[in-house]
Amino acid sequence: MTREEFKKLYDLLELANPGEYDYNGEDTISNEVRRGIWVSIINLEDTQGKDSWSDCYDLRNANGKLWERHVLDLQGKRLEIIEDVKRAAEKVFSHE
Image (cartoon, rainbow, N blue to C red; front, side):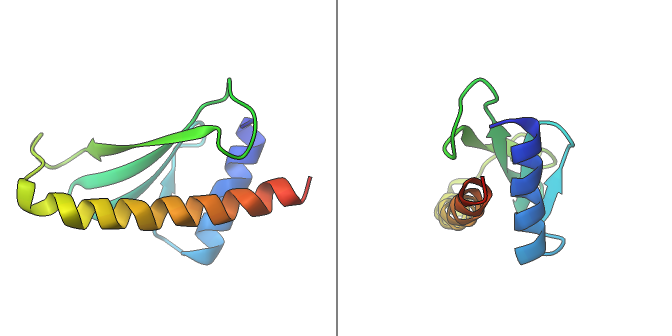
């Protein structure tokens, strides 16, 4: 996905979910799913098309720990975020 397409993706996510997503202006869109634990969407600029991104857990302020009791909740929230991203990506690519 180009940087411009990724920015459009972020704009659509922000429009649908005001204040929930952070964008670093380059290649990462993040959503805090639990205190200190984020799901980040990483743009893979070398790959073209609507599925040219990947996701990961980002333990920013979680003291480097992902507790087992959080895992199921985090997986559910991650799937919700991925569905939001897929819907927004469809809109980005349907306008081209």
